[in-house]
Amino acid sequence: MSQNTNLPDLVIREVTSDIWTFSRPFGRGPFGFLPWGGRSTAVKLSSGDVWVLASTPLTEDTKTTIDSLGTVKWIISADIVHHIFLGQFKKAYPEAKVIGVDGLKEKKKQNKEDLVIDGEYGVDSPSALYGFEDEIKACYFSGFANKDVAFLHVASRTLIVADLLFNLPGTEQYSKSKTSPKIPIIGKLNPESGLLKWLLWSIGDNKDAMRRDIKTVCDWDFDRVIMCHGDVIESDGKKAWENSYSKYLS
Image (cartoon, rainbow, N blue to C red; front, side, top):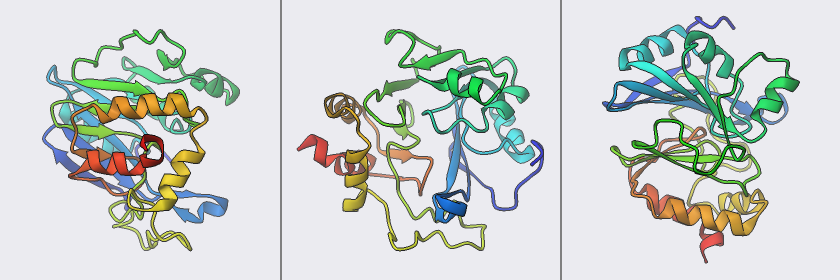
C-alpha cells in the first residue's frame, strides 16, 4: 500500500478537541482469522506539539487530520509488537523522535529497516524524559510479555495503551467493513470476561513487576481508555482496568 492511499474502512474520530483516533480492521492469527482491529491515537499538547501512538497506516486523510492538530514531535511504539508503521510516520515527520521499548532497535535492525530509535523504555534510565511527561505520563511494564507502556493524558483523564487492555469486539474498527467484528468461538474479550483476566495473567512474565506497575496505573486519575484493539471505553475506565487485572490485585 502506498503511504498516501486512503483506506475506505478507516474511521477517523475526534474523541476530544485534543485527541483523535484512527481505527480500522486488523486480523490476527492464521490468515487474519481473528478480527482484532487496530488503532492509532494522536494527542495535541498545550505546546501545540503532537504525540502519536502509530499503529495504523499513515494514509493521506490520517496525515491531513494530524497536521491540522500541530507539529508531530513524538512517534510512539507502545510495545515491541506495534511497530510496523513507524517508518511511514518517520518518513513523513523526519524531525520527530521515535520512542519505543526494549528490543525495538534490534528488531528494526533484523528487519533491515534504517530507522533511528531515539528512546527505548526498559533500556534508557528509568528517570529518562522524552519531553512530553508534563502532560503525558508513562509506566513501562517490564514484566509484560510484549513490554508494553501505559500512557496517561492528564488533561483529558485518558489512559492510552496497546495490548495492556482489550475491549473486543471492536465495533468501531469494523464499522466501515463488511467483516463482522465478532470473534469466532470467543465472542468477547473485554474487561467483563474471565478470558481477558486469564490472558493478562498468562502473559505477565514477572508477576511482582506486573503488580507494581498495575498499581501505578491504578493510582492515576483517568476515566477513558483508548486501546489498540477494541472499542474505546468512554467512562468508568479505572473500574475496567481494575477488573481486568483483578487476579493481580486480589
